[in-house]
Length: 276
Image (cartoon, rainbow, N blue to C red; front, top):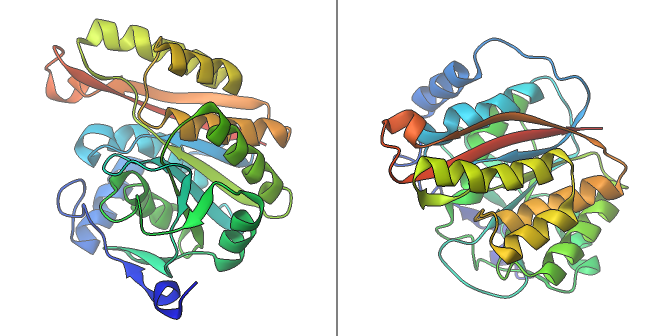
């Protein structure tokens, strides 16, 4: 990896659109979404969280992130889909940090190097990171909940069964050496009437609740459920199950129609937490 690549910082791409570009305003917005402190029933090992604009999915995401206040991790792994670029494998950001209005979040170089060594489909690259929002929108929540932290941003290109399984196994290996929080970034069904969306979303919700990554992968392939980050969710669920995590709580599910009042064409949002 070149020195130039290792020292570069990715600037925020959707601040001012998906969420406030003003640091103080953003922190106030997140604290309002967090509300009163909420104690988790165990150590939070993983989250599934949405990645839409905060006005739409922020309240859903906050149900998970507020559980992290006071927690400590060696690093946070955020696994996201690629909305703007198609590629094979997994893109690991090769730079030094992501930047948000709340400051820079450093990439963990040791974790990156170890993942690259054990996951052949992964490459250090800017591909999938440049304008991608699905990693970025998770970071202000993490910064507000955890304070200073290190993280590993992963963007999955081709969400094939093989790639998702290999990534899940690699994450499980890393979780055996590091105290990791694993976050799968995904929204659910897109642009269906609310009644149809809730039927599609219910399939994924039950698979997540059961932590059944095999069933979820099958349902995604059969199109009996939809999620732009379905593959990342499969990988994180597989990793958590491999590490012996068995308890998953569905914290919130809603659609954009619950915010806008327009139920004719909605996007589904889910937040769930896995407890070790």
